[in-house]
Image 1 (cartoon, rainbow, N blue to C red):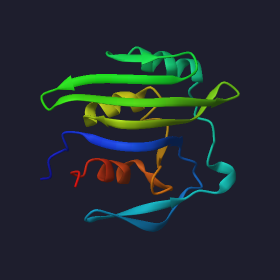
Image 2: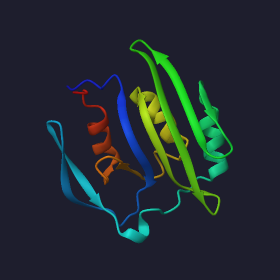
Image 3: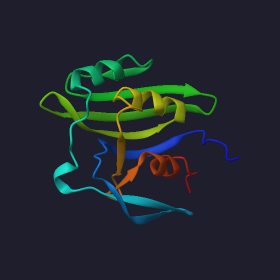
Image 4: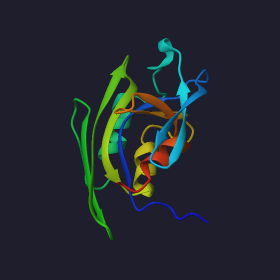
Length: 150
């Protein structure tokens, strides 16, 4: 049985996953091969079900998190491994979150709390790996973000 990672490390854009996103291609990430998603251009920024205001309020309610009216966030915490931090920005269209930039590191359980602010697990999400410029599923993101740093 594989143990869960102590921390996720990431630099992503969090998006709603449209039903038209299909597995197409792969990305080598350390010793892992991650399936990438092909998303039609017009559907890469489908709004999430959650409103900008609601998501920002939910995020700002997380202990150690600071949210600004412009959508910028700073979330810090500490666990047995030490301090962690997530920085980000929410972007909206028509009052709905279109995507969020998130970078930093945090324990997987805290990452789940952050995703819940965007309607997860009911809201289907995908992650755009900023440096690789590819979309991946939530499961593949977790594999990528939880790998040990080299």
